[in-house]
Image 1 (tube, rainbow, N blue to C red):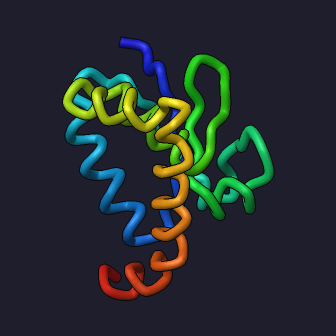
Image 2 (image 1 turned 45 degrees about the horizontal axis):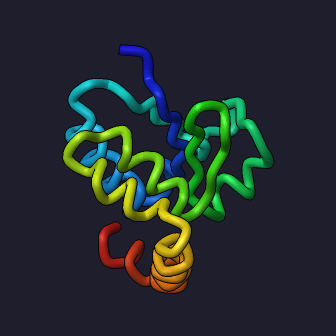
Length: 115
């Protein structure tokens, strides 16, 4: 299967690496291409610093960040597809984005716990 979603992740982040390991395990169909943008030799579709600051995913030629990127990734995994559809509903997007922004504030502390 040709990947339908490309996920750009921070391979230098222990928390991100753990999450990507889980997503790879769940992605049994190979629907997602995972790209580590912490490697300076990796080609990036936008500024590397922007890719490292927020989670990004490309789906059907559109680049998403934050909660919408997670929704795109979830839609590519059958088990998580309902959550991905829910997260991308217009009324739900602000809720999921607020949760993602809350996570970003906690991320530095969580990284220390898993490293």
